[in-house]
Length: 336
Ligand code: GCU
Image (cartoon, rainbow, N blue to C red; front, side, top):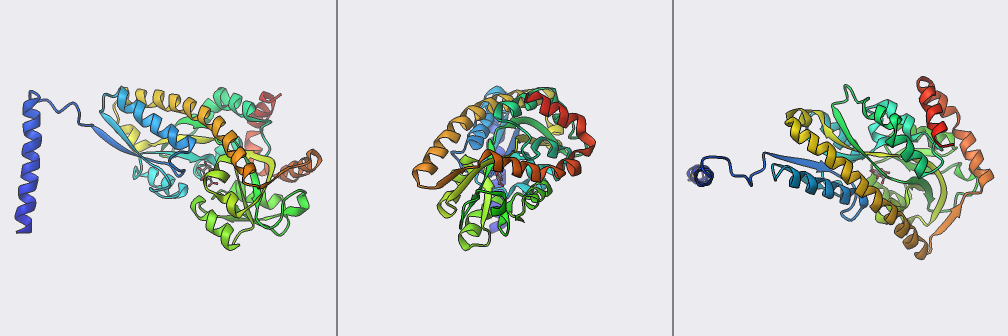
């Protein structure tokens, strides 16, 4: 009986579709998308990167006249960043916006763009990403099964702790600090004298709450949006790294798309990135305000102390950038 019902339903649906095709003169209905694609985003709905993703999906739909539909899944619904990148290798997820830290585990050269204390500020980073250096990096994804589309902003990362503030390099000693799942991030924390604890983003709140970790590090909007500031009240501004982010598409999905849709996707990714950067600037300011109003203790690292932090990570340049000395020199020169 159940089988008969299913067969009837399938026949019914097929007939309905055929009738629709008949009504539109035998052609496929123009409202039916040719491609329905998934997009993974691990931030909350109102976060700048998520809003950028929605803008991207909206633009693509509009400019392909509904033929390419992108379904944005925010809040990590499709998995944490590492899992999403893995799924993209075989097209299990079509698009994502990810942080360069976990991505560099698959495309190691990307570590160069997120070395500790590399940029003097946001303008420096954007000069690099939007210039020849950024373009060259976008062209270095061969054999990764991923196609990079556009850079997104994620500001600068700072430390936050539960028990006591970080004011001097010695304060790092003995702390268990959560890091992204990235060798570079682990080494940075170790170089600064603390113990790195790699962990997915979504697990950090409870780890702070239970005391499994003594702190973490992130930009203002993430610290605020995740409510980590409720359980970790000391925020030390040292800006130890700026980790750019990327919108990506799985190579296998990319190869299925006709070139006119590929072109539209590239353009819309660029436009959505400009939109995200505007939202990012606003959100950085509102998040900082909210955190200060909530009574968190915000510490500006003394410049002499910051110089000691910078000195401590210098050996990492030898480990990660020995093959890219020219690029590092060019990045540093772009900030002068
Ligand atoms: C930032 C970034 C996320 C990342 C997170 C982390 O918030 O935008 O993509 O997952 O850092 O620390 O894991």
